[in-house]
Image 1: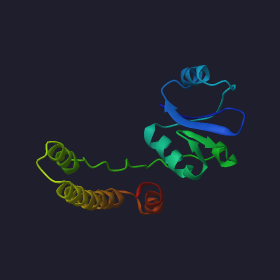
Image 2: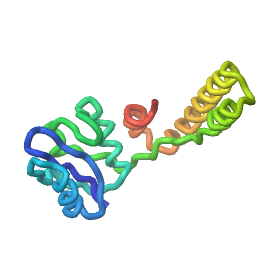
Image 3: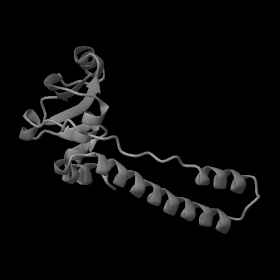
Length: 149
């Protein structure tokens, strides 16, 4: 898989990933009136793509489109990029079902949602600490900057 940077010639760049970048360019071109061009292809996949998108968050125009920056020509995602944690949303779904069925009041529903959010934060903090502990020390700052909420 490859990470691609495709530009529209007007300072906008799409950061994405694909198995076949040339095929992806054709698909994007069909939906874009401006001529598109491959600016750069980097070896990598979804994690590297997400790292770049978070790195350029301040340049985001919308979706996966970003304002061009000269650094895009040389920047490379780190080799060691762990996936961000994604805890399951269990209690809110149950709370929603109970509220819709009329089994709990709106106030009870709000309390369950609040408790679930606090539990999720604790779980995320634990997962983040465990993942960070597996990284080499020089990667801790990078991890904190891009993957810790």
